[in-house]
Length: 118
Length: 417
Image: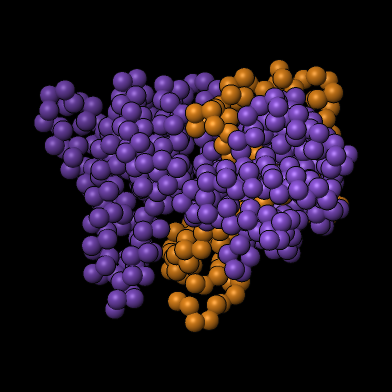
């Protein structure tokens, strides 16, 4: 099986490249905004109620993988790519004209070839 | 020859999936949401024609145009037949003219897909059906593929689709953007995020990430932000930030042997900087206005993404963000996720206390992740016996092979025999 990585990229290139410091700054700014709202007690009222029950209740009340990926990744980190799809995607990317237009540009990067396996 | 044919088949399958939603959306404009099945049938027929024709003659220079033209002609034929039915004469004639004159432009296709998103997420349709409709109609997934993603049977998915389409007909849902677009937007976003998560998690059948689903989710969300009809885009930006930031870590999550790699051990050089940058840009654009689950989760994810390594991650900040998250939505799983940051900031004992408390107040103990998390904390505190008990419990709760394998490894580290 070939090991390739498929990357999604918006056709619009990043407006600017951030330096590590800038990234830090931007993220801290958002963090402060969030904390400010929390301290002002504005959390509950700000969020439409329908958001609350929905994600958890999906799949009939079972605890599911909603927007709660952090623990999984930190503890068991089991997100990984579908190899067959990747191979498929590589073959596709070679000749697929779709990626020349529309919102998407797909970038395929080889990781490593595994010898002796088709 | 055989290889070429196989290559063609794979190429066309993937290509078709992407084009399916676009063409169905455009055709639904002309046949109406109560006839969305007709639109789907037309596209199915078109794709079958393409498969036969392209297999024989090779892929045309402009495959998209070929598909669209064929679909358009098939639709025109059907509408012409409808013309003879009394009820539809005037309307159908007008639609016929419109369709005949229709030029498939990128912009138009985006517009129609946007409308389709809102149609599929109409409030009269149940949540399960909404997401099934989006996957089927907009993303072109087969019923089997959808069933696999949702741990259920093809029959169940089919029922949801049938019910969804029925609700479209009964409620006479029209093919246009709703008036109260911002209310409906939250449903669409939630559906997109559920879609992303389904792609993000391995299914019960021990498959790897359905990367396609994640790509589709991002694609749909970007259609939203690029459309001028939507005024309030903060939540869209926040959701996109979250998806891009999470997606940036894909490559590092699997070892060359196909094994799970915990974040602690991931090679961060493999984290995609472009995706991280894009994620942070979206994060930037989303602040100031509204708070949402997505915004907080995205910020947490961002903090992980810019950390040099696991130990040097800004755990204080992450803990504080989780505290804010709890104000917004206090749930056992949020607290479970928070416990990891808690351990880093206040120590393992504190985290253990929190989890034991959580266990007695909820049924989170039924989730294997709870057990592995607690086991890890015990292990770090050298409480190997307690760790072993919890890992064994986790093992009994794991519902797929890959998770089970991973837990077993952890268990053997603690209990070598």
